Image (cartoon, rainbow, N blue to C red; front, side, top):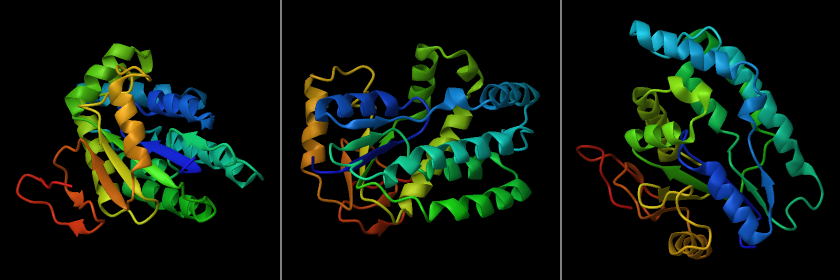
Length: 246
């Protein structure tokens, strides 16, 4: 296997888990999935988000935001402890999350004081978590994400709004624009949607081929026009409208 550990990232509804399962099955790799259903605060967090939206308020200031983020943080620390086990990468490992994802959500959802506390706790753990060998960053337009979330029909996600998904997508974009960790392959899931494309179909085979040909440090597969790094890894300032070609 070319990459011992591939982590798949991106906003809610973009197809991370579906692609992770397909890649793990195709490669005979171990699978490590995040477990949002195990977070006892998440459903109530979304309910509060829905009430705030009805009042015309934003998602910051949610009373359950800090508990929700810390629970996810500790969950991921525990899950990623498996990376220290001898031989864990012998058959390869595919995960549908990056440790940094929780900090991306925290910066979006926490107020200033809670965010400062969160970052102190996060910093203590982040240095002990090894980077994957490759990050696959999936992205799509917010209206596309919202439609996919609606189709999968999870009750607690019914409060998610297009504005929230737009802010989340922007947060991922800012993260990967300044990313200094593992190499990144960005995939436009407007053109390739993991949940809609068969694992043995031509689109999935193109993804597999693109992974095998990846040289890094930052490349696009069927890219949308996004600000960030050029294909040779150089940081590129956003043009008018935030457009570049990778």
